[in-house]
Image (cartoon, rainbow, N blue to C red; front, top):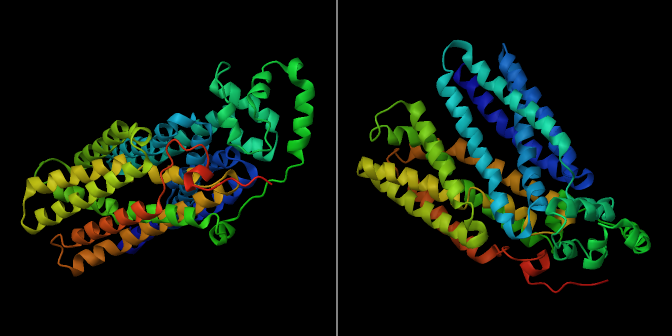
Length: 431
């Protein structure tokens, strides 16, 4: 491929991701979380398959576009699904699993790329993506819709039964059911009675009638930004996605090999794998922190660490201190993994009610893809304009400072909060 062709192949994935993120929210709100998750596997299978067998640029570009659509949609839907099926007290831990599995995928891909780098073996790497997607498609046939979405849109009684089955027959689900809404039949007596159909049949009939008459509104992509009730959440999630990308993680990943090679004289492929291992281990070790310290605290810890690492990286490049550059790169990746990596994907499902989660998640991921593109497109240009001596990392340090101020000011803590009214300190209105 020529350089322009390679640029198209690289960037078109981002375009597909943006398209998938914009479409996934409305679909998941109207049709549930499970159906669009299953649809994403088709995009992965077809996209990776086309890339693996491509014999010209247009075919591989179409494959990359379809794979990007699947990736963008998945990053909207999967965190929503996880948040709605995870036990409330461990929602942060389960939410980190999105980022952990992304890192596992990166590590697997880079390892395959290192091992299969001869001739046309790269096709095997891409075909592996289609194979994994096929396994995922089969697995998704055996998982249920989320009880929260089902209660709000289809069958509250079945949702209660499903939640009780997921949590275990001996688990009290009353508190969790109450967060679904006042008109959902979620009192403790009825929830326990679902395990004994004969005992509560008369009560259930009246409750189902009441629930079926309830009109659940769905808030659209543009409506959620215009509505004063949801606008603070949109500002919060877009700002956090700004921080995730504009603190410089992709720039560090781009240049990490060249920065580490003088300190660790080995092949670039092995260095890339090493960095991915560090990222994965840091994400796993930091997984419990979201529930122990809180989302906001983890974000501020992550931003502070990345800002300091950016400053150290800039100084190491200006004064050619190789060991400081290596330490700065590794600490940068580690601090990203404990906060800005996983937590932004959780927040959209914790800052708004059920009716607006899909649209809010679409805003979050659309912002993510746009800011990712901006860093990939303009970082090399700015770095070159500043002489390529590390001055650009002072800019990232400054952006980290602004991000920390924003998170302190506009992002509420969601750990331990039962519902969005408690998150935002609002008094619930009962009509």
